[in-house]
Figure 1 (spheres, protein in one colour):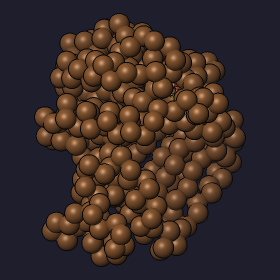
Figure 2 (cartoon, rainbow, N blue to C red):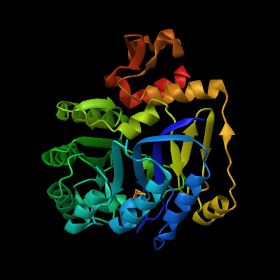
Figure 3 (tube, rainbow, N blue to C red):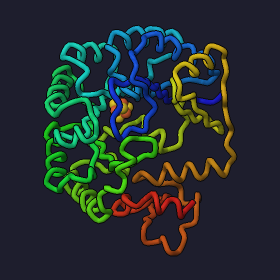
Length: 349
Ligand code: SF4
């Protein structure tokens, strides 16, 4: 029976849709019965569970109050042994929780919070279509710290067309001022089928983006830069996300969630009603990938990180040798070239 140590749980509700968002979510009233479907879905899988990490992503997991998670964990505990769980992450929108909610969340067992701050600049928050203000983020992170959360991560987006170097520096400094254990800085992406896509021609010039990225690396030199977009203090690298990048097994529950278990990669429909129907009729759609597809995926994921992949996985093309380093039988892209890693990786595979 395949061993599964990592659970992803997708919460597909949002209070409004951000202009750049490519994640599956609907702007509908959240419904607690969704948690029952998650439990029913879990019952469909005959895997050897030894859960080490759980990650609530979205959508907006904080659209539900901690009470809903309390009820969910009581049910989950009846199905799985959660005594070995090391990390339970929840993504939050800065506006959703009050002081007492953070305390309740801690009691539920959530021990890592990932705040979708995106920017501390009101003009850019508005442009991105975020529903919160700078003050909401400041207040929310303070509440979380007061409640005793140590493992806090902030998500920031950079590269908005109008963003100046000074504004980006301000965002970096504001983020560092919270002394978070973890920081993720994502470059703005113009995904098709998002409102932002129509503005793709306004995209910041690549030279400016490269400059911003250099600045970021310089400013965050006290953090470990362990993945293209991710920085952590020692011991605070995201265990759950590392599992993806190391190509371990993970099971995704919920509408639109993806899974990888041994040779199988599968996903649930990006439609809450269809997802529910599939679960209730026990319809699973597992697809096995061949060895070559897995090899490519493993390279794509591994080369995002400072650990890279085993040297034996591919031969570095002669013209790309300068972009790579080797150490202890592993090969990785030099951090100064991470910004163009997508182009490098696609040449490799
Ligand atoms: S809150 Fe997150 S998931 Fe929801 S629309 Fe905004 S970016 Fe997308």
